[in-house]
Image (cartoon, rainbow, N blue to C red; front, side, top):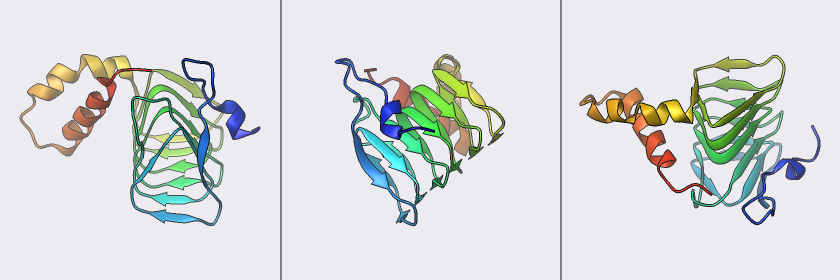
Length: 160
């Protein structure tokens, strides 16, 4: 699996996203969590993960023992553990061989390594953008429609 810090994407100046937050094994975070740069999770997060500043490069790395029960958002998302919620990456999603995902996966680039468990849909960001008009014309309070409208709003932010 290698050093997670080595896998972090580089920003416009060629610098890797700094690993600013580590949730170690045995640690439980109960509630939504915002982060800067990079976050590595080997513990459990019961809540949504989102970058503090969505306009800056960010990366989420969920280790093999990491568990997130909530949505995960970032520029790049790497999953080797478990996510019970939607994954939304402005750029790349990587799903490791032992990963378990129960939710939709939105991405611009996708890498899937070997056998894994994904119970949800793979949705390329470009299709999400194309569907925006249809979703916004819906006058339903349908939870699924609202969720995708929120995702599309994140796509409309300037990209780094």
